[in-house]
Length: 153
Image (cartoon, rainbow, N blue to C red; front, top):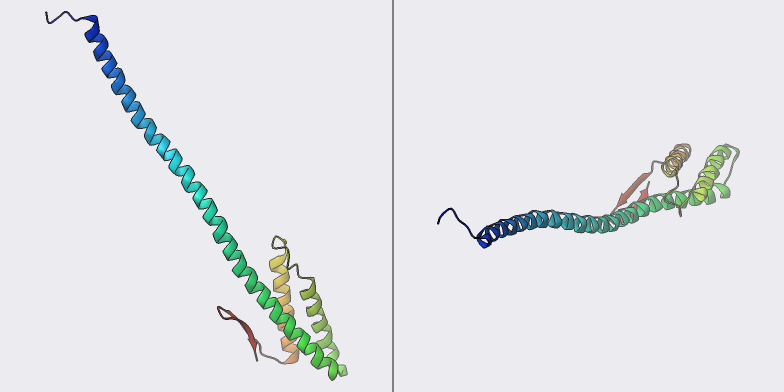
């Protein structure tokens, strides 16, 4: 009796099809789940590495700025001593620019990397340093390298 089926056969086939569907759904859902888990793990690892890399970059960049400012400060203090020991009337403009540079350096916010005008203030210090060098008739060669910074004449 090819036309007649027992209730068990129908249920078995339906169950097998349902089981196959469940298996298919499980495979599709596993792919989605693994994708989500992989994304989350990658995001967390990337965030962690980004923080580390950002810290390293900030440290190097901050050290360069500190080295540059320190060089300007040392230059300014040395010239203040030189000019004070032999100050003449024509040196008054040099002293005024020199004291202005020292004041700008001392007011520079070393401890606040989020300071909004950090780059503008740094550019003003650089400009004042160049102005002072011009008045003193000095040709500085400021370099920042892996070995450190230097100012030569």
